[in-house]
Amino acid sequence: MQSFPTARLDYQITPTVAWHGTWNLRSSDFTSGTAPYLNSPFNFVGPAGTNIHSSATPYVATSSVDWTIRPSMINTASFGIQSNGEYFFPGADPGRWTTFLTDLLA
Image 1: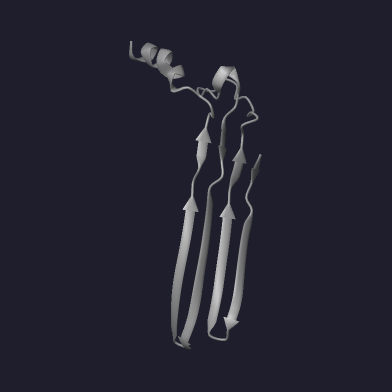
Image 2: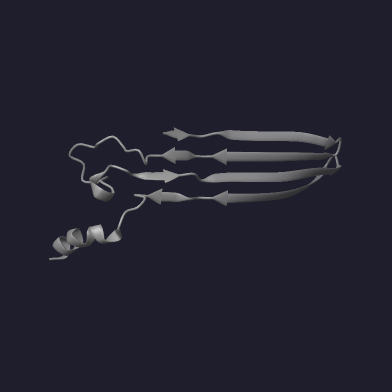
């Protein structure tokens, strides 16, 4: 399941000062399984033969203030934060590739 919620808020504090805030999120959860890809060279098999794949919840949030000093001069201060937590094959053991790599390099 995936969702992509987004929010933006603009607020005019005074006639010369404005605040802006944004938030963007991508939520992907394939931990309950994925559709099989028949004859695919990519193996989406997770731990214990399951098709558990990944989960991710990266987001971006910003906040800024605009100050209109004169009609021809604007001063802006911005701050932002970003996260990119993506987890592929939760609970997987990297040792599961040992046989594959040994055969490949032989």
